Length: 545
Length: 60
Image (cartoon, rainbow over all chains, first blue to last red; front, side, top):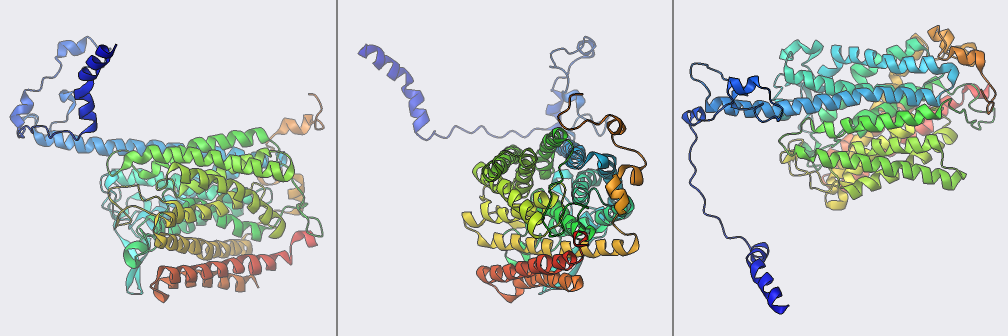
C-alpha cells in the first residue's frame, strides 16, 4: 500500500510542483512579423465544398469572408486589422441595439402595471397615455431633445467615435467650464449626425427618455386631461429630461465635477437612477401636486381612502416584463460588449437580478409585518424599487452591495408610499413617485456609498483616471458629487417641471371635469370603453360567471 | 405662496452648487450640499405642497 502511495506521489510531483511554485518563464519564441504574403497561404474552402452545404458550420466564416479593399492586391494585413476593428464595433452596435429593444419593450410593462393599478373605467385612457407617450416623446426627442442631451458628448469609443456629437454650450463658473447643453444632432442630420454610431446612440437614449416620461402618466392617471398629458410629455421629452441627462451623461457640468473640482469621478449614474427614474419621479411629484387628488381619495378631514386597482394579475405580469426589460436597461448602459472593460456586463446583469429580488423581499416582509398580509402590489413595487435603485450603481458595486441596496429600496418604497399618501396627501395611484423618485434618489446616493473601486471601463470614468469608489471603500468625495446630483434633481428638475405644469394648467388646464372623472375617463376623453363587455356583464365581487 | 416655495427650492439647488467654491474640504462641501438639499425639501414639502393642500378638492 505504502509503495502504491509513493508511486502515485512521485508521478504527481511534477504537477504539484508546478501548481505551488512560480512557473519558470517559458522560452519566448522570437516574434515573426506577418506580412501580406503570409495571408496568401491561408486556405479558404473551395467552391465545390461550399456547394455541398455546411451542416457542421466549419467552413462558414473564414478568410474568404474578410472584405478586401483592393482586389488587385488581394487580402492585406490592413484588411484583416480593419475587419477586427469593425467586428468590435459591430459587436457593440448589436449589443446596444438589442438592449435598447429590450428597454423599448418596458413600455408594455409600464402600460399594464399602471392600467392594472387603476380602475377599469379608466383602462382605455391609462393605456392610451402609455401608448402615445412613446410617440410623443420620440418626436420631441428627435426634433430637439437628443441634440440637447448628447450634442456635446464628445464621442464614444465603444460605438466607433461619433465625433460629430462634439459641441457643448458652456459657461464659466468658479473658473471652470460648466457644460449646459449640446448643440449638434437636431433631426439627426444637423452637425454631421447622419452617422451610424449616432443612430445607435439615439435609439438607446430615446428609449431611456421614454421610460422617464411614462412614469408621470402613472401618478396623474384617472383625472388627467389627455391634451395636457400630450403637451407635458412633449416638453419633458424635449427639455426637462435632456437637460439633466446632458449634465450627467452628455459631458455636462455634473459629469465633470471630478475633473473640475476633485469630487471623485464626478456625478456617476451608470444607467439612470437619477437621469431616468428620479427625473420621472420628481416630475410626477410636481404633476401630482398641481393636478390634485382623485375625487374620493381623501375624506373631508384629510384621511386617505384606498382606491383599489382593477387587475393585480396584469400588474404583476407587467412587473415581470419590466424586470426582463431591465436586463437591457442596466447591462446595455455599457454601450458595448467588447473592449474597455465591457465584459463587466455579466456583473451588471447579476447585480440587477439580485437587487430586484431583495427589493421584492423588503417590500413583502415590510407589508406582512405591518399589515398582516404580503401585499401583492407593494411586492411588485418593491421589485421595481430594487431595480430602480440598482440602476445607478449596477456598474460599480459587487453583489453584496447590490443586495443591500435592493433590500433598502424595498422597505423605502413602502415608507415613501405612506408618507406621500398620508402626510403630503399627494394622490399617486401607482406609487410612481415612491418607486422612481424616492428610490431613484436612493440609487444615486448608493453609488457614493457602495461603489467598490473594482470596475474598470477603460481605466477612467468621466475623464478621471481610476475606478468609481464610494465612501465605504475610501472615497468620501464621490458621495459629495452624488449629493450634488441629488440637490440638482430635487432643486432644479422638480422646480423646472413644476413651472412647466403650472403654465400648462393656466393654458389648457390639467383636470377633467368632475362628471367625467366620476363616469370614468374612457368615454369622455377617449370615446371608447376599455372593457365594453364588462359594463354589460359585471358581477358583484365573488359571484361565479 | 407656491411661487415662494419654488424660489426656496431653487435656492437649495444653488447652495448645493456653490458648495464647490465655498469650501475646499470634502466635509465642508458635504455639509453645504446637505443644507441645500434640506432647503429644497422644505420648499417642496413645507411650502409648495402645503399651499396646494389649502385649496385641495377634498376640503370643499
